[in-house]
Length: 305
Image (cartoon, rainbow, N blue to C red; front, side, top):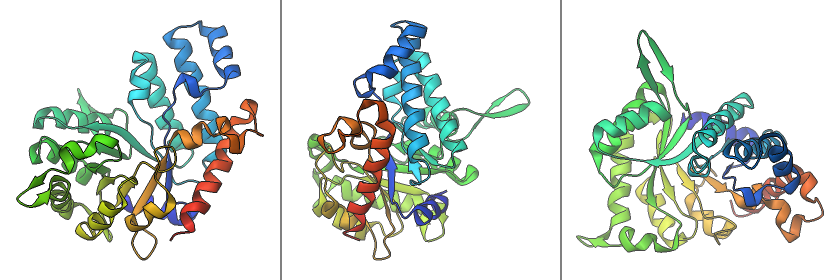
């Protein structure tokens, strides 16, 4: 799977993914108004507004990006109606030829992780039929429970040619409370990095493993260390743009060949029309604003590679 992502990155010359993390506050009023007129101010109305918002953005950027990353929590908050839109979004992005990274950060004891892996990446047996659930291409995974919590995901990646991005050094301000703690002289994130390389050794897909790592753009000194510790690991890099990470901060996430990382931007793209830089597009043309934000992001990152 990671090789398919790399091919898409090379085709588009865009090492990025667009985070489809819709909140009602990001959606232009004319979109929510139309949805509420049809379904009322209900969970169904909110879900319809999210669907129309996502579809417009995907339609405007799908030919210039390799991947998207819907954050499932933004859909779960609207209950079953929201999850239905999550699945609808995943399927639509597949129709548009995009790699879909499901941002669900799952991880639990072995049997529960196996169910998560089946539901998000693999298949579940229903009578005589083997059926897929959400069917994302790559899933974010929380490694806090250790190997027996991650192995079920790795097993599905191997059998279904899917991928993972395991949390290693995240971009949020308080990540250091646990991740930077020294254990036998090394920070915890370095121990996790070593396990990611180990877990990925049996899932190689060309020069990189299908088991990748989440490494935040907001800690460039640490990403430089992690790049050396995980030579066969692709990085998913959050924290660019709205969270404060710059193109210069991203440089060490990449290898000399310009590969090795895919950089996420969520509200910086999907809510671009709200920024001063793109206000000339206006709410009516929010999809066009998102497209321009993608073009600008790619140019910014390319300037340091």
